[in-house]
Image (cartoon, rainbow, N blue to C red):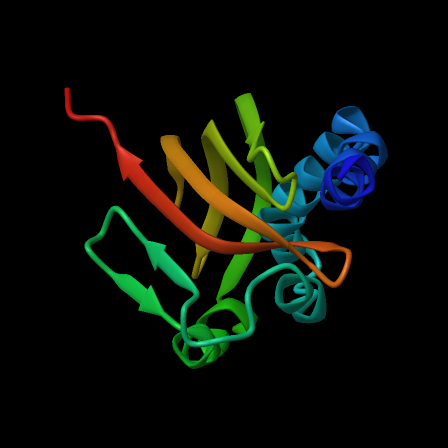
Length: 153
């Protein structure tokens, strides 16, 4: 009987022992930064490497635009890759990252300043609340859902 209980618990013990919260937190933080930082050099491959490549991917923007699925993201490529769009800089403040008990899901909250230009004019999101959910898939942290909002004054 003891062998059966030990056999059932062994996978749980192994997973807990292999999950390094600090290492995983840095990997998640890197994925979050890449999700905004890709735009500076228009590295679209970096963007796609960090988001869910499926129909369940979801982004809710403060402009009431909702991106549903990877195909919606691809429809926006012309905007982001246009020479009229220029990413200037971004800053992520007060980033908080949490993990599920299993260690394969993370969620975050921060304040984002995303400074850009469109046709030489400011196109900024400042003091933007940004939340998101990431899932570890095939060893990589992938953003599966994000929500951006502006505080009401």
